[in-house]
Image (cartoon, rainbow, N blue to C red; front, top):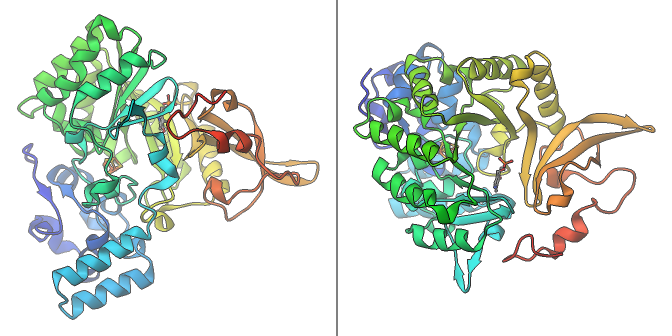
Length: 441
Ligand SMILES: *Cc1c(COP(=O)(O)O)cnc(C)c1O
Ligand code: SF4
């Protein structure tokens, strides 16, 4: 295993040494589906995570390599024909673009949460919940590998108009000076940890100044611990990253790494163990979140094992998400009932230290909606739901009910229970202003 990062994409994946063990059918699927969905993997994933003796069913292979079922049959067929008759690049690209636009590239109205500073639209910022601002540094809009289920995929596939990105910290700092209700800033992407230590530092250092004393917590959302733990061990600026983390802690802020692990295998290598240890030694916390994905982690035992490993390594289980309604969703989705069953079976197997995890939850326009469970109330089978996070903080933690629907995989497919016309928050939600998401009272 080399700890020099080497990427593989559609252009060079045939040079992966282990690829010779992969069937021609799977290779063909990569060629076809990889035109539409982003495809990138690296030597750590290849050498340490994928079980090449079982690629047909290997969860990490499925996590990085495009597979047939990820495209609808007709879309697969269309691209296959174009490739078979050696169509021009222009013709294929046009078709690819057309197909991508049918895949709901920008789900759950994220653009509605882009705030303004006077007349300037702050494209690199999302501010949906009063206390937390999301920041998308422009140099962090890629990742150490691409997840086949990812809803950020338009950012990686050149659909630039949808890219939330911002070149400078200036506007971010101005915005935060004006918004003293913000206590948390979450750097996200892509993956901010693909940035050099110097770039990351340029974004984070200014926040340590006294004028930003209202910012209590700095969070970094990252999949780097799963895809490239050497970021914290042997990359040439690893020590600078660790020093930056220490300095954030010394400045009296919380530093929380929002790590993304989909499967216990990702927590099983020496490198990830050491990387977690190194981050923890700075005083930073590591919280872990992941979507629930058919073909990758749809077994309660896997989740129980994952949460236990996280706690063993000093990390805090945080969220289980329901797969978003975008991209290859149909391949990864599970009915809400099934999501809840997997959650509760896993949750009931682990100690209280693992039960910091919340879920399963859907990040809808209105907020993060958790499926608390299925119940029968006076003869009607219903979903019991609640907001973990809401566009209006008053909605949070109030149980509400939807008609049971065994097929529903997302909140927008649910109807209010007991013959109600609307969910309790819908009236207010329709009044939410685009530019001032929570100043509607
Ligand atoms: C989840 C999320 C947050 C952070 O919510 P916490 O519950 O505080 O982790 C912030 N903004 C958006 C858009 C989110 O989806
Ligand atoms: S690491 Fe995160 S942003 Fe990057 S492809 Fe995976 S889910 Fe998407």
